[in-house]
Image (cartoon, rainbow, N blue to C red; front, side):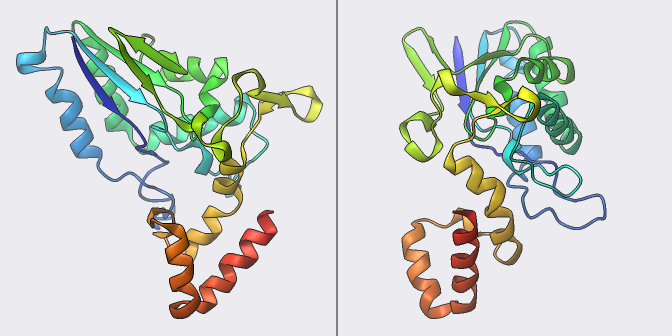
Length: 233
């Protein structure tokens, strides 16, 4: 058995918006490379070999998919399904490649749910993925096979962790909604505003060093960062 594990692709609704503008919230631009990777390990010498592709969390970036220009934070099943449909529409070739992968012999996909795609905990969201991609996709919170442990790891970060018994809370009209952690809410409320002026802001490490640098070299943006953060709190 060959195991392939990839994570944190943060696939959004596509590189371009309907009006032709660049989508600054799209983190994934390597569609061609990913498709080649998927096809390579399901054709040729790997065609009949058993291959398990583990999508190890945050494959979809559902936290930053707007609906009508609004980033919802009260997220129920209907909203998640609409977000999934937008992601699949924006990256049709990737999801077609995943479907073809599963249609070949001895191939399976294990999808570990992460913090950016926590909406997949909804049953109807899983059903949407089965309908749009393939009915054999197996969803897990963590997965162990042949002594190998696969997990996204966000439960080890307080800012991103929600206990499995509290994944949902009661929303308007007693409809179940996602119980989003602080990290998830930050990605919805603050990050889109911060990335308007600095699209790279979420890729800088360590953040503390950047904040110190911004105080000296980019003070107007530092003030904007502080204001947005305070509004978020």
